[in-house]
Image (tube, rainbow, N blue to C red; front, side):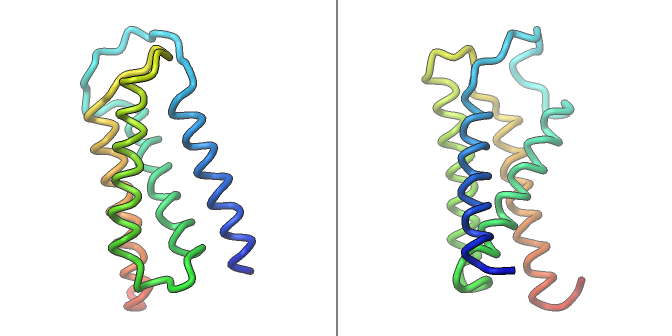
Length: 119
């Protein structure tokens, strides 16, 4: 598939991730920190997908892995900070940050396995 096309998909995906992370949500009565909630799986999958998309959108698929790791984890951290700062009824959730980071790390692991032809 054309890298420019994948890059466009990655940009749109990232914009959607920003929007969905910052839109107001009703208070669901969920406690402030629970590590094992269903939304943590969604966070894991979203950041795994973000990592895979951006890796295939980059010019050099494997040499930018460490930069991608840092960027994606930092991106998730910044969105969590914005959830805390902005008055949209969202809050910083350490469990979300952990799930985001694990999704990124798993994505990097899968990319490593592809590079080494383990998958």
